[in-house]
Amino acid sequence: MESENYTFGPYKIHQKEVFYSTQLSYAMVNLRPVLPGHVLVCPRREVKRFIDLTADEISDLWLTAQKVGCQLEHHHKASSLTFTIQDGPQAGQTVPHVHIHILPRRSGDFEKNDEIYDAIDVKEKELQQKLDLDKERKDRSLEEMVEEADEYRKLFS
Amino acid sequence: MESENYTFGPYKIHQKEVFYSTQLSYAMVNLRPVLPGHVLVCPRREVKRFIDLTADEISDLWLTAQKVGCQLEHHHKASSLTFTIQDGPQAGQTVPHVHIHILPRRSGDFEKNDEIYDAIDVKEKELQQKLDLDKERKDRSLEEMVEEADEYRKLFS
Image 1 (cartoon, one colour):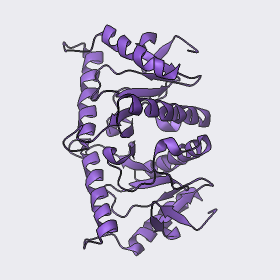
Image 2 (image 1 turned 135 degrees about the vertical axis):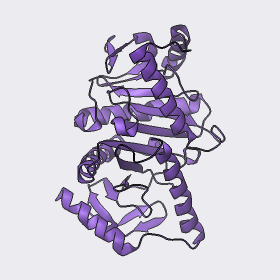
Image 3 (image 1 turned 120 degrees about the vertical axis):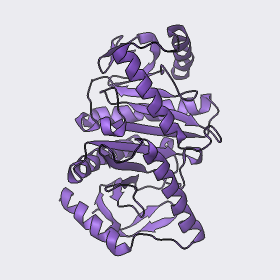
């Protein structure tokens, strides 16, 4: 770990939620994953849109995503991956900090394959409500997230 | 244009459908776009999965996607972008050649924001049927696609 300070838009991310990082990017577990292994990969620098990233950041971000996706696909015995950036509010972005959703996929994980995107969207809205409005809801516990991050961290050591 | 030979998995792509290219990547218009400006960015080398790309290819692919997305968002007076890779059959990939879907997005383009992914999926299935089974259906004409590619090509000259 190059740094113990991670931010995700306006929010601080606990270092124990981060399971892999490079000089320019980091990978973290998800408060409300829609499938096992659904994680986020972000540039360390807080930029809202993909166009704001430098060439070095883009390269590092996607090399990180490649590495993370490969490890989690195998770890979860999946056979495919979904990589998605919702780049801007009209594309479903709620946290104004570029992030790649990575989801290990397997046959039958969603009845209709692309229902996964609706699920991502619902979770992002719930997340936004939690973060912005502090509404009551059932999150994963920090302990549960830390346990998952510890499990994933071993894949990269 | 560095080359006039483009392949997309097992299919040959007419150079007139390609509106931007680099040494390692190319961007083409879409046989059945689900929104105006819905294009594909691919590595020139035919690889099925994202893990198969080299670091240079990943960097070039996503720098190309950044550039293409920015130009098409402005050209179509949109305000966001969707970037998606369906990496493997269980993620909805039908053509076994890595490709990034880029879609300019604006408010209200889909009633539910993420219906766009269902639309992509349907189009990919239709494309597969066309390509594999040569079923009768209504494609865009080559002339229409070439006209669009000509329009987009000017954005990068």
